[in-house]
Image (cartoon, rainbow, N blue to C red):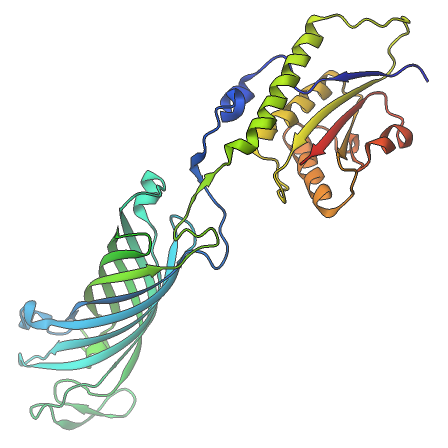
Length: 388
């Protein structure tokens, strides 16, 4: 075997548009990345709330009574979770007192109990992007649930008649007093005001639409009954795993990156020197093989290639394009062939094959660098060292 020539080329001397587009091209790292939020767990971003307000029922003969006379109190308890900065879901239990109209212009009352499942898309975050310190957010509401109407007030002027309804039960003269259970469709808008880290003040207007029988009156001309809820509530937000009570920006410990940046700059300087100086081979033997090293670092327990390290993957891909017959060997600086190393190696392999179209058969994973030169007979070697 002819003499091996080892070259160290960590970074390419030319810096193309790919690197220029990345924040780390000039190592201009910021401690807080406002364009990305931290991943969350299932137990993150939960909240509970209590609401109170007024409900205005509408349906059969609504126009016979003024709006103000039909306002009645309503109360709700909620539990929910923010899935993303834009998507929030909740379950609400509601009690309401309601007023109904009759064709003779007299009023009666009844109670409702509701169980709703709501989706609340955050319109502010959707159109303006998420910001940690934003105090006011506007939301839409789309929901579905069930509602029970019962406790109809008895009136002397509403006696039971000889007529029966569709289920064979006697009907009252003007409104039926039997209990109904109906599906409720909900649409609304809301505003959320952040009071502090724990509490938010919420103002909502929600339209509820149900079958015409909700108010005890079945009117062939009117296919829907419903009620408009105007409510104010306070929600309490629990701590997340990172001790915050909301979605948090990605934050970096810049001190951890300083040694990596210095190491990359030193290697770039060495690569520049190697390019400027001719390679002198004293015995004048023909160079038959090349071994080229590239290093990449991962944060503890991380297995995905982060943005700062994409430069090294790019450098390896560009080196391979100059030596397409070379095989790429991903090795571990610690020589351990553990689960974390294999996951990291697969991440690097995926980027090289998917993004840079390097054939997978030319990308090999071998934990111990010493085994590479003894086990494999490649034309050229590109050795990719994973370092924590």
